[in-house]
Amino acid sequence: MNLLKWDPEITNIVSNTEGYSIEREKNALNMSELLTLLEEDSDIVYKVDGNRFSYKVAFTLVTRNKETEIRQTLYLDDDNSLHVPFVLLKPIAKHAFSENLIRIGAIVENAI
Image (cartoon, rainbow, N blue to C red; front, side):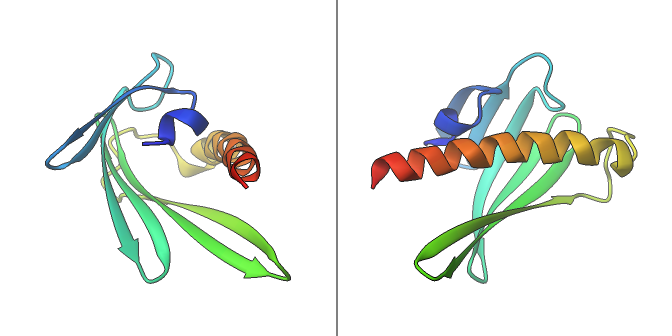
């Protein structure tokens, strides 16, 4: 799985019958996660069950004028056991997603 190439917080990924078990660095919001890949409409969705909270990340590819834009949307589960207000989580998630999308873009550009 190429996730290790563009998400530096991840230290280990193991494929199993339920999906992918992911281990993250000490300072991550979730130390361990179970990631399941889904396809919803034309999006690729990561459904993540973490040790502290669960969420989904939807990746949407939009092509215009021979360019492709990647949109990444975060959906938090209602039973967020982290008890962190979304207003505090939002800038952390935006920064991490921005950094990861820059790395994804570099990987894709170098693969062409």
